[in-house]
Amino acid sequence: MAKGISVHIGLNYVDPAAYNGWDGELAGCINDARDMNEIADSLGYSSTLLIDAEASAAEVTRAIGQAARQLASGDICLVTYSGHGSQMNDVTGDEPDGKDETWVLWDRQLLDDELNGLWSSFEPGVRVFVLSDSCHSGTVARVASFKRKFRSAEFAAQYDRPVNLAPRIRAADPAAMHANYLANRSNYEVSQWTHRPAVTASVVLISGCQDNQLSSDGDANGLFTQRLKEVWNGGSFSGNYAQFHSAIVAQMPSDQTPNLFRTGVANTAFDAEKPFTIGAGSAGSAGGGMSISAPSSFANSATPLTFAVAVPSGHYFAVEVATQASLFNSTVNGAQRNDANFYASWKVTPFRQGSTFTLPVDAWNRLRQGASQLYYRLWCTASPTSWVNYQVSVSESNAASAPSVTLTAQSSTGSGAEGGVPAITAPTAFQANGSPPRFQVNPGAGRYFAVEVSTNSWYFTDKYSAQRNDDNFYASWKVTPFQSSALYPIAFELPAAAWTRLRDNASNGRLYYRMWWTESPTQWVGHGCTTPNSAGQNAPSFTLTREFDRDLLTQSGK
Image 1 (tube, rainbow, N blue to C red):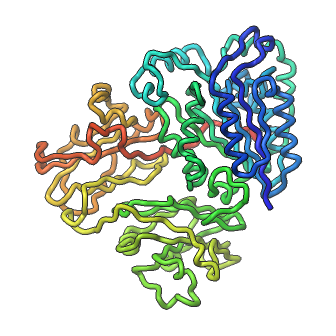
Image 2: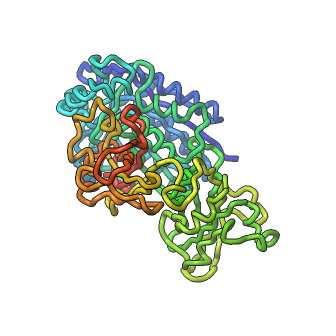
């Protein structure tokens, strides 16, 4: 039976004697640690709570090190940190930005090199989940900029505090950090120069902000931890780690975007699990390093469903989708399969490689008609053309356990008149360095449409419309006439120049969108909008996925 051990670290203060008189006062960090400890206890973890003076570098190292000795393949370690973050000069030259990141503990800083050494002490097959509500970019200029932006209505609403009340920030005082560094320089450099083995466990980190951002403190919790708790919602959240991260990001202000890192050995079954799961394995995953996952619900619209897939290196995959899980049992129900209730990619194309699979539009339109659920499974083979050493995520005898997607907001295809309520849809994520995103739009019969895309949903509201510019806002109606809806579905592609500007200025890693419709090709006649100005802040969005610089956890092999 899998075992779970957790360590929860929270510092509202540090020892002034260790930091040149600076006590690092914060308010919500101990609450963060206690709340995360409570979540872990409720799930069956064996937990350790370290707060303020208890959270010395030696005690944190001991607690994590002991967990590493007690856990074996299939077990999980949860580590949460809430407090100040900082940086110091990287003397070894292995950091792209020339800085090592640190946790600011009671008596000294704990370097990312040291944390990497702790992660490398876990056995292969152990899962490590780290939550860090801190930041590492406490420059005077950045703090001043953050405080100015904090006074906006957007930030006041997010933080639930008066607009003019200056925020507390979890970035350590640079002068105190420099004094601490000088006092302990030789010890820090020993840690930086010590070579450590590569991480062979599987480690996932969700941090409170990006490298160039700041994490805010609150009276009850840090903002990141507060939003994490809201998304977790007492355990009712049902997605995987990436979906957990995305759901938290969606609740955060534009200048604090939690980040997702992975290091160590890739573990697709771990990635597909519900966060904090102790027992390894989850619906849609299988042994042998293969997995398939999809959102728990998806709009029954013109945009086809996309799956996240993973197979062992050098292998190939095929995907099957059915309107009934029983159809995966070919021995019993194979004769009942047809194009309207069953799709197999291996029947129409060679086996594939990659990390995603999108249902072809024709198959998607056939399967979704009248269906409330779609079931799926993954095949894996060692050959691009034949079944060699193949595996399947859900066997015939276990077909009833196949994972599924609930289809919501059903609509029918056909002409604009048959397209249902005016709508615009897009996939949940796009590669930031890829082609411009494509939207599926349906303005309705005889109407024309325009699309708007923004780096912040608040620019869709009247209050902030004056702050729009070419770097944060695009409107197709400003550069081209309204477009015809003679056929449905209609694909609208964001122009390349606008895509480049918007993605490069999306500070929270998301772009927001909406569609206007009008009865005239040139004027606003009988017009409407999928997300009106009065609710502009609630516009739908998609995540920009990209490669990030190595940070707290991406120092394997140092």
